[in-house]
Length: 475
Image (cartoon, rainbow, N blue to C red; front, side, top):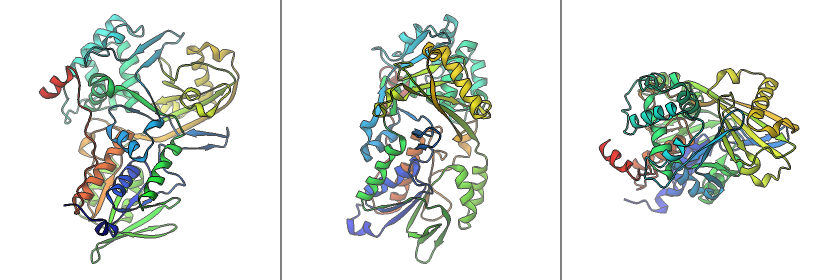
């Protein structure tokens, strides 16, 4: 049964949290006809995927480089909803560089999936013959879905699959552990397998890599425009202090530092650490303590990024994977964001899953990054570093160790007319923008299911192609 505009006009939803999860839930519900109130404690939307004017360099920078892939169907759907899908720079190749400058390129070929990446992998200088045989053995073991209740760590699994040191250091640790932002012994095998299947096996389309061509806050500002055009409101600089449920009138009262809001429904779309702080200020409820115990078991992993501006062109590559050093990824913002019109080069260097690097002092981290970068790009030695910034996102992601799925809660919450969103809830994905968007769509779907609104926002996964269709049927 579909609701009429008059029936929906009085149905209000408050969404707490203006990150990717909150924005995707809010925009979906606004599109369905609800009157949404999106509340964010900061002065801009985006959460951990945001940008700001960094005073030390007087430049607008992202808090960390965020990427998406062709398999991120919900994030892409959200971008289409708010009209920013054309602001994504897509590429299908990954350049791996060894110290000294030798390059290997991974990417698709005309062969059917899962063989489409095989020719370039076999031709990659970065891997020895033994490494390539080990990688092929590992990929074959992951070609079918691994049960989610598998409690083996990726490190143990790699040993059992007889992976070589080169395969481990230059692929599993750098590409997979970096993507999941954790050490190998702290990664659940099913999540590693999901990354492998989605990015390297299901199809060339699924593995295509996308990066925003504009600052992240500019990208997500379109969500605010979308909400306002659909009769909803965005409350920035409004930190939520508590929420109370009135059973008699079936209404939530949300108290913020700037005032009080009321609504029939509530979506809490916060990172798990912010959820921890809010829980004591929510009404007592059955299973509320159980949720609190689950939230307490989540763990953060940091991501660091060093931003550097040089007086000359360093490389024409838009991005690269850097092997055998502390810095892992290079993003050439001069190429990815040409609107900047930088005279020289603006590079962002990302270091994932290393608490050691995150503990370095600012100048130590910058000096180390510059020294290592010169091993890959000789132009660094003649270039002048004009300015630099170090960003430490100490709460960048949550870990996905063995057994993590037992504590990831569903969209339904212990409270009436209240739903949960956030990359940490049970989405089946690791800590990514896709997981956050899926959680927002799951919350919107669950909320709509309790009313007379007939809608579904969760986007289906991309279907495997080529020979992978056969393994999907058997898996």
